[in-house]
Amino acid sequence: MLSWATLSVFVPTFLFVSLTPGMCMTLAMVLGMTQGVRRTLWMMAGELLGVGLVAMAAGAGVAALMLKHPEMFTVFKWLGGAYLGYLGLMMWRSRGRMAIPTELEAGPGAGRLQLALQGFLTAVANPKGWAFFMVLLPPFLDSSRSLVAQLSVLISVILTIELASMLVYATGGKTLRRMLGQSGNVRLMNRIAGTLMVGVGLWLALG
Image (cartoon, rainbow, N blue to C red; front, side):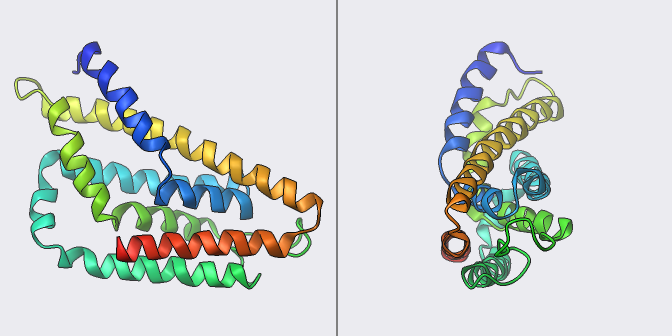
């Protein structure tokens, strides 16, 4: 297990990093705006699964091999970026299930699997995430203690903080939707959300 001294340093460190605007936080804000916080939880579930897998693999040293072969990420990066970019363009044109319908309460939202897949791809296809966990986790691991137990605690802390941070961003998106919705600017909301989504896609593909 980890000492309280270790956790007292790790928690604020990762909290600061997690709250910093990034791909996953931007995605949470966009979906909070277009889908609502409750439906965005499905994206969060996929993202947390992806982050957990990346953190576990990085902590176990698997990422060392993958980072030596960056071409392994290329396909995931470009496919994931293209997918998010396509969704963003559809939202910008107020089309597709990801966009906000002209009547705010009309039409079905995006599918749960689609939302979860977005979150998972964004987390797993981000090589910066792998590199970050490779750098962040080792200093907090004690070779004289059980690696599995230590990683379990650290990953639990990571996922808890990550979820809280995404909820903050998704709630901000919902608030923006409410503010703009009152003035009937649904098309403007779709264009803001679509532009941000395209940005996330480019960030993922080119980052």
